[in-house]
Image (cartoon, rainbow, N blue to C red; front, side):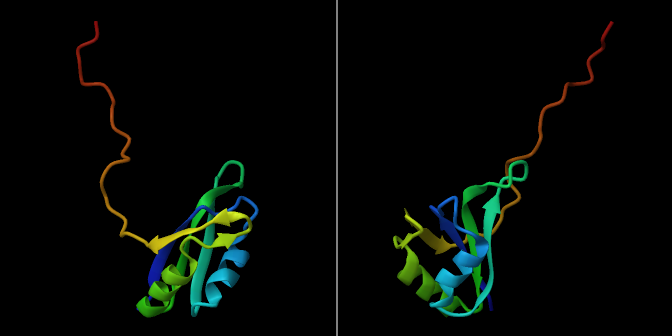
Length: 99
């Protein structure tokens, strides 16, 4: 069963491939993605790495959390499941009678 990791503190120059290389020493990397701004394409400073097993993911957390990569200290932790709360576009105006 694969396990996704959250990786914070990524240097703006770090690529998804560089992230994959760093995590490969801990096991099989299924995917590695540096999250970028959709308008500018610039790194947002965090990303996700998916390891092939829970054991490899735990090994990666132990090995890489706090480690320097491209001049920045990484924060590596098991990714929390996505929730359906918050972030909605609320608002709107009630159906008042405009005269």
